[in-house]
Image (cartoon, rainbow, N blue to C red):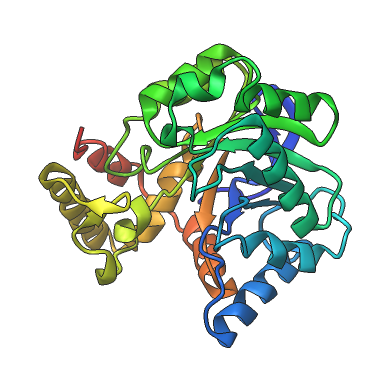
Length: 304
């Protein structure tokens, strides 16, 4: 069982709940799906979820996600709630310039209906490379300037490749780190990255604890991991985790989410969901008692 109450993070004066509501999938679909995300955002804005944090991005849901959140907030962020979004490149032109970062920021603030956010990330810099965004007058300089002028309380770096993310962490410029799909039941490749971030007093946010779906046990995600074909060694680890879960009588998804929630290097786990029912399921999974012997067995199955 894992407590979901907000708690101090890193060396920052920011209280975050262990679960963060992720909105990457909040794109326009059917009327029913749009109503579900509207209701989920409204529940968060009213403080009726077991999380005080919502995570979005300029491009999430074809730039739909922020508007859903803005509608729910109606211009006011309630006490204790934390809004974080991300600066994004112009996808069509792969433009990661400082000017594009300013456009991205203004678009996000307009959609959210806010003058500032709690946390502002540079998103997926792997699309252009470390040197490109770190050049003088570039994207990172623009992000730092945004914090300096008060449109963000904290700034962060959000991306995938561990080696590149470590280079950003080592600059000492950032307050928060998001990494995805590299710290799960079957992959601990981000462990050193998270330790380096923690050593600098950064907030560590672990995203995609289900490896983009396969660790939920849902057969729709069979054969994939982290948005691509699964490696044989990772599939073997997933199969082993599935067997351990079945033998223990515990849902595989519960083990996957609790692995992230209980780890001392993870301040909050970003969980992408589209309905209140799916979020409530994750809360229920966090409450399941998992014997120490199960965790010990899971530690033997790593793919890397």
